[in-house]
Image (tube, rainbow, N blue to C red; front, side, top):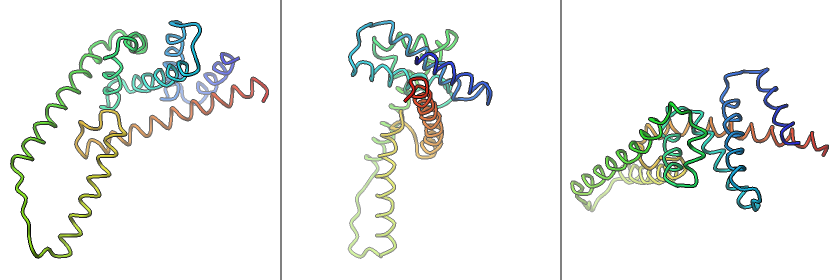
Length: 200
């Protein structure tokens, strides 16, 4: 029944835009679900949930072809674990083996760069206490602290965000949101198609 819903949805997407992000995601997600399902026959509900999430995340990252840092971070993270390496290998094309290697190296290099900046910042920073602080300076410092706090939260939400500077973080966040919207649309449409096939 789910297979019928998938065929209906693939045909629906083909009519609209054959090279769309949604179509690429759906194809890779189905492949990922097949790989996850072939490893174990009797999966618990929790294992199924994890397999669906993992295959969806890696499929979404693989649709970006390594052009974004968040996608390289997801691929690098999944490539670290032995149980998810097989899924990454199946979802990424054979010619993108260099992508996996570069994504792992990229995360490490960015981490070193950020650490060096932090060490330099702390070594050069001198706290100055002023007795008379004007309201403008106080407002600026409060605003700066709020922006820094929001930036830290955003960096924790975007994969690989902790290794990005502020401008890159905004660009990557916009692309990540666009990709997540496509992922949600595909999943939502698939759920509706499954309900139609099951007659609910």
